[in-house]
Image 1 (cartoon, rainbow, N blue to C red):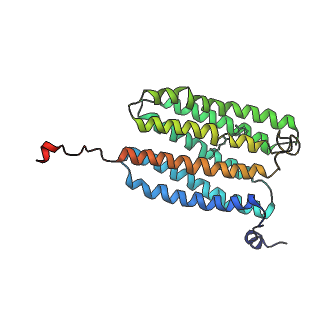
Image 2 (image 1 turned 180 degrees about the horizontal axis):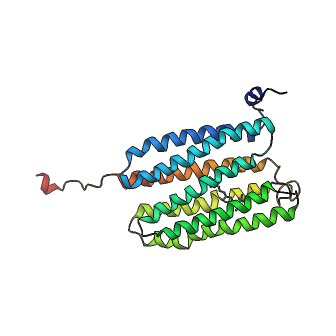
Image 3 (image 1 turned 30 degrees about the vertical axis):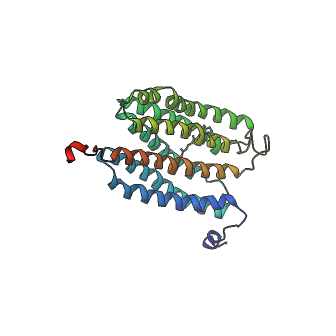
Length: 257
Ligand SMILES: *C/C=C(C)/C=C/C=C(C)/C=C/C1=C(C)CCCC1(C)C
Protein backbone atom coordinates (compact mmCIF):
# COMPACT_ATOMS: atom_id res chain seq x y z
CA UNK A 1 0.00 0.00 0.00
CA UNK A 2 1.18 3.47 -0.79
CA UNK A 3 1.87 6.01 1.88
CA UNK A 4 -0.73 8.71 1.44
CA UNK A 5 1.27 11.32 3.32
CA UNK A 6 4.24 10.86 1.05
CA UNK A 7 1.96 11.34 -1.96
CA UNK A 8 0.71 14.63 -0.55
CA UNK A 9 4.27 15.91 -0.24
CA UNK A 10 5.11 14.90 -3.78
CA UNK A 11 3.61 17.75 -5.76
CA UNK A 12 4.55 17.06 -9.36
CA UNK A 13 6.48 20.09 -10.58
CA UNK A 14 4.88 19.87 -14.00
CA UNK A 15 1.29 19.66 -12.80
CA UNK A 16 -0.43 23.07 -12.79
CA UNK A 17 -3.67 21.48 -11.58
CA UNK A 18 -2.02 20.28 -8.36
CA UNK A 19 -0.40 23.68 -8.01
CA UNK A 20 -3.75 25.49 -8.17
CA UNK A 21 -5.28 23.14 -5.60
CA UNK A 22 -2.52 24.04 -3.13
CA UNK A 23 -2.49 27.80 -3.82
CA UNK A 24 -6.28 27.80 -3.90
CA UNK A 25 -6.41 26.33 -0.41
CA UNK A 26 -4.02 28.84 1.10
CA UNK A 27 -5.50 31.83 -0.73
CA UNK A 28 -9.02 30.97 0.45
CA UNK A 29 -7.82 30.54 4.04
CA UNK A 30 -5.95 33.86 3.99
CA UNK A 31 -8.93 35.65 2.44
CA UNK A 32 -11.26 34.27 5.12
CA UNK A 33 -8.99 35.60 7.88
CA UNK A 34 -8.79 38.96 6.11
CA UNK A 35 -12.57 39.43 5.67
CA UNK A 36 -13.38 38.33 9.21
CA UNK A 37 -10.80 40.63 10.82
CA UNK A 38 -11.72 43.57 8.60
CA UNK A 39 -15.35 43.36 9.75
CA UNK A 40 -14.43 45.62 12.65
CA UNK A 41 -13.39 48.43 10.27
CA UNK A 42 -16.82 48.89 8.64
CA UNK A 43 -20.13 50.24 9.93
CA UNK A 44 -22.82 47.86 11.24
CA UNK A 45 -24.74 47.92 7.96
CA UNK A 46 -21.80 46.30 6.15
CA UNK A 47 -20.69 43.79 8.79
CA UNK A 48 -22.98 41.04 7.49
CA UNK A 49 -21.56 41.40 3.98
CA UNK A 50 -18.01 40.93 5.26
CA UNK A 51 -19.12 38.03 7.44
CA UNK A 52 -20.63 36.32 4.37
CA UNK A 53 -17.40 36.92 2.40
CA UNK A 54 -15.47 35.34 5.26
CA UNK A 55 -17.85 32.37 5.31
CA UNK A 56 -17.63 31.85 1.53
CA UNK A 57 -13.83 31.82 1.51
CA UNK A 58 -13.67 29.85 4.80
CA UNK A 59 -16.00 27.12 3.51
CA UNK A 60 -13.99 27.00 0.28
CA UNK A 61 -10.71 26.73 2.21
CA UNK A 62 -11.90 23.61 4.04
CA UNK A 63 -13.10 22.00 0.80
CA UNK A 64 -9.87 22.89 -0.98
CA UNK A 65 -7.96 21.24 1.85
CA UNK A 66 -9.75 17.97 1.07
CA UNK A 67 -9.90 18.40 -2.71
CA UNK A 68 -6.15 19.04 -2.81
CA UNK A 69 -5.36 15.75 -1.05
CA UNK A 70 -8.01 13.88 -3.01
CA UNK A 71 -6.50 15.05 -6.29
CA UNK A 72 -2.87 14.47 -5.33
CA UNK A 73 -3.50 10.91 -4.08
CA UNK A 74 -6.00 9.70 -6.72
CA UNK A 75 -5.26 12.04 -9.62
CA UNK A 76 -9.02 12.21 -10.16
CA UNK A 77 -11.46 15.11 -10.24
CA UNK A 78 -13.08 15.68 -6.81
CA UNK A 79 -16.62 16.01 -8.20
CA UNK A 80 -18.56 15.40 -4.95
CA UNK A 81 -16.39 17.70 -2.82
CA UNK A 82 -16.58 20.41 -5.47
CA UNK A 83 -20.35 20.38 -5.60
CA UNK A 84 -20.72 20.19 -1.82
CA UNK A 85 -18.62 23.36 -1.66
CA UNK A 86 -20.65 25.10 -4.39
CA UNK A 87 -23.97 24.06 -2.82
CA UNK A 88 -23.00 26.19 0.17
CA UNK A 89 -20.93 28.96 -1.39
CA UNK A 90 -23.00 29.85 -4.48
CA UNK A 91 -26.20 30.54 -2.50
CA UNK A 92 -24.07 32.61 -0.11
CA UNK A 93 -22.76 34.63 -3.06
CA UNK A 94 -26.36 35.20 -4.08
CA UNK A 95 -27.07 36.43 -0.53
CA UNK A 96 -24.18 38.86 -1.05
CA UNK A 97 -25.90 40.25 -4.20
CA UNK A 98 -29.13 40.56 -2.28
CA UNK A 99 -27.53 42.43 0.61
CA UNK A 100 -26.14 44.97 -1.86
CA UNK A 101 -29.58 45.85 -3.23
CA UNK A 102 -31.56 45.34 -0.04
CA UNK A 103 -31.08 48.97 0.92
CA UNK A 104 -32.56 49.88 -2.46
CA UNK A 105 -35.76 48.05 -1.55
CA UNK A 106 -35.14 44.45 -2.65
CA UNK A 107 -37.75 42.01 -1.33
CA UNK A 108 -37.02 38.56 0.08
CA UNK A 109 -38.73 37.03 -2.98
CA UNK A 110 -35.78 38.23 -5.08
CA UNK A 111 -33.42 36.29 -2.83
CA UNK A 112 -35.53 33.10 -3.15
CA UNK A 113 -35.68 33.35 -6.94
CA UNK A 114 -31.91 33.79 -7.21
CA UNK A 115 -31.26 30.88 -4.82
CA UNK A 116 -33.65 28.66 -6.79
CA UNK A 117 -31.82 29.53 -10.02
CA UNK A 118 -28.49 28.71 -8.33
CA UNK A 119 -29.83 25.34 -7.12
CA UNK A 120 -31.09 24.47 -10.62
CA UNK A 121 -27.69 25.38 -12.05
CA UNK A 122 -25.83 23.21 -9.53
CA UNK A 123 -28.11 20.15 -9.40
CA UNK A 124 -28.13 19.76 -13.19
CA UNK A 125 -24.39 20.42 -13.39
CA UNK A 126 -23.83 17.73 -10.77
CA UNK A 127 -25.94 15.19 -12.67
CA UNK A 128 -23.94 16.09 -15.78
CA UNK A 129 -20.58 15.46 -14.12
CA UNK A 130 -21.23 12.77 -11.51
CA UNK A 131 -23.41 10.44 -13.57
CA UNK A 132 -21.66 10.77 -16.91
CA UNK A 133 -21.65 7.78 -19.26
CA UNK A 134 -18.95 9.49 -21.27
CA UNK A 135 -21.34 10.47 -24.04
CA UNK A 136 -21.72 13.90 -25.53
CA UNK A 137 -25.50 13.61 -25.28
CA UNK A 138 -25.35 13.37 -21.48
CA UNK A 139 -22.85 16.19 -21.04
CA UNK A 140 -24.70 18.57 -23.35
CA UNK A 141 -28.20 17.82 -22.03
CA UNK A 142 -27.41 18.44 -18.35
CA UNK A 143 -24.99 21.25 -19.12
CA UNK A 144 -27.69 23.07 -21.10
CA UNK A 145 -30.31 22.64 -18.36
CA UNK A 146 -27.80 23.96 -15.83
CA UNK A 147 -27.13 26.96 -18.07
CA UNK A 148 -30.78 28.02 -17.75
CA UNK A 149 -30.22 28.70 -14.04
CA UNK A 150 -27.04 30.59 -14.84
CA UNK A 151 -28.75 32.72 -17.49
CA UNK A 152 -31.48 33.71 -15.05
CA UNK A 153 -28.92 35.08 -12.58
CA UNK A 154 -27.03 36.80 -15.40
CA UNK A 155 -30.26 38.39 -16.66
CA UNK A 156 -31.19 39.58 -13.20
CA UNK A 157 -27.79 41.19 -12.67
CA UNK A 158 -27.69 43.02 -16.03
CA UNK A 159 -31.34 43.77 -16.87
CA UNK A 160 -33.73 42.20 -14.39
CA UNK A 161 -34.65 43.00 -10.81
CA UNK A 162 -31.14 43.42 -9.39
CA UNK A 163 -30.14 45.83 -12.18
CA UNK A 164 -33.37 47.83 -11.88
CA UNK A 165 -33.06 48.20 -8.12
CA UNK A 166 -29.47 49.35 -8.51
CA UNK A 167 -30.44 51.90 -11.16
CA UNK A 168 -32.99 53.40 -8.77
CA UNK A 169 -30.69 53.78 -5.77
CA UNK A 170 -29.14 57.04 -4.59
CA UNK A 171 -25.91 55.37 -3.59
CA UNK A 172 -23.16 55.60 -6.15
CA UNK A 173 -21.24 52.86 -4.32
CA UNK A 174 -24.13 50.40 -4.56
CA UNK A 175 -24.57 51.14 -8.28
CA UNK A 176 -20.87 50.53 -8.85
CA UNK A 177 -21.00 47.37 -6.73
CA UNK A 178 -23.90 45.89 -8.67
CA UNK A 179 -22.17 46.71 -11.95
CA UNK A 180 -19.02 44.94 -10.70
CA UNK A 181 -21.11 41.98 -9.62
CA UNK A 182 -22.75 41.82 -13.04
CA UNK A 183 -19.30 41.65 -14.64
CA UNK A 184 -18.25 38.88 -12.25
CA UNK A 185 -21.31 36.83 -13.23
CA UNK A 186 -20.73 37.50 -16.94
CA UNK A 187 -16.97 36.87 -17.09
CA UNK A 188 -15.92 35.09 -13.88
CA UNK A 189 -18.83 32.66 -13.78
CA UNK A 190 -18.57 31.90 -17.51
CA UNK A 191 -15.25 30.15 -16.83
CA UNK A 192 -17.17 27.27 -15.18
CA UNK A 193 -19.20 26.11 -18.20
CA UNK A 194 -15.98 26.29 -20.26
CA UNK A 195 -14.25 24.02 -17.70
CA UNK A 196 -17.29 21.72 -17.74
CA UNK A 197 -16.78 21.23 -21.49
CA UNK A 198 -13.47 19.46 -20.77
CA UNK A 199 -15.37 16.54 -19.15
CA UNK A 200 -15.87 13.17 -20.88
CA UNK A 201 -18.16 13.82 -23.84
CA UNK A 202 -17.66 17.58 -23.45
CA UNK A 203 -17.62 19.90 -26.45
CA UNK A 204 -14.07 21.16 -25.89
CA UNK A 205 -12.44 18.01 -24.40
CA UNK A 206 -10.77 15.00 -26.04
CA UNK A 207 -14.17 13.65 -27.17
CA UNK A 208 -15.07 16.99 -28.74
CA UNK A 209 -12.97 19.75 -30.27
CA UNK A 210 -9.87 18.53 -28.39
CA UNK A 211 -8.90 22.02 -27.23
CA UNK A 212 -8.94 21.11 -23.52
CA UNK A 213 -7.44 18.16 -21.63
CA UNK A 214 -9.62 16.39 -19.04
CA UNK A 215 -7.95 18.01 -16.01
CA UNK A 216 -8.36 21.47 -17.49
CA UNK A 217 -11.76 21.17 -15.85
CA UNK A 218 -10.12 21.33 -12.40
CA UNK A 219 -7.65 23.98 -13.51
CA UNK A 220 -10.40 26.29 -14.79
CA UNK A 221 -12.69 25.67 -11.80
CA UNK A 222 -9.82 26.47 -9.41
CA UNK A 223 -8.91 29.69 -11.19
CA UNK A 224 -12.56 30.74 -11.41
CA UNK A 225 -13.13 30.04 -7.71
CA UNK A 226 -10.24 32.32 -6.74
CA UNK A 227 -11.46 35.12 -9.03
CA UNK A 228 -15.07 34.89 -7.94
CA UNK A 229 -14.86 34.13 -4.24
CA UNK A 230 -11.88 36.30 -3.33
CA UNK A 231 -12.26 38.89 -6.07
CA UNK A 232 -15.91 39.56 -5.50
CA UNK A 233 -15.35 39.62 -1.73
CA UNK A 234 -12.72 42.33 -2.24
CA UNK A 235 -15.09 44.41 -4.36
CA UNK A 236 -17.74 44.24 -1.63
CA UNK A 237 -15.05 45.12 0.90
CA UNK A 238 -14.09 48.19 -1.14
CA UNK A 239 -17.69 49.39 -1.23
CA UNK A 240 -18.14 48.71 2.47
CA UNK A 241 -15.05 50.72 3.32
CA UNK A 242 -15.96 53.69 1.15
CA UNK A 243 -19.54 53.70 2.48
CA UNK A 244 -18.28 53.47 6.06
CA UNK A 245 -15.93 56.42 5.72
CA UNK A 246 -17.27 59.17 7.96
CA UNK A 247 -18.84 61.78 5.78
CA UNK A 248 -18.07 65.04 7.59
CA UNK A 249 -17.74 68.08 5.44
CA UNK A 250 -14.58 70.10 6.17
CA UNK A 251 -15.20 73.24 8.24
CA UNK A 252 -15.91 76.22 6.06
CA UNK A 253 -13.57 79.21 6.16
CA UNK A 254 -16.05 81.46 7.95
CA UNK A 255 -16.67 78.99 10.75
CA UNK A 256 -12.93 78.62 11.36
CA UNK A 257 -12.27 82.31 11.65
C1 LIG B 1 -17.71 29.78 -5.70
C2 LIG B 1 -18.29 29.04 -6.73
C3 LIG B 1 -18.96 29.54 -7.80
C4 LIG B 1 -19.18 31.01 -8.02
C5 LIG B 1 -19.46 28.59 -8.75
C6 LIG B 1 -20.15 28.87 -9.87
C7 LIG B 1 -20.52 27.83 -10.74
C8 LIG B 1 -21.12 28.00 -11.97
C9 LIG B 1 -21.49 29.34 -12.50
C10 LIG B 1 -21.38 26.79 -12.73
C11 LIG B 1 -22.02 26.75 -13.91
C12 LIG B 1 -22.29 25.57 -14.78
C13 LIG B 1 -22.93 25.84 -15.98
C14 LIG B 1 -23.46 27.20 -16.34
C15 LIG B 1 -23.18 24.78 -17.02
C16 LIG B 1 -22.36 23.56 -16.80
C17 LIG B 1 -22.36 23.11 -15.39
C18 LIG B 1 -21.85 24.16 -14.41
C19 LIG B 1 -22.43 23.75 -13.06
C20 LIG B 1 -20.31 24.06 -14.37
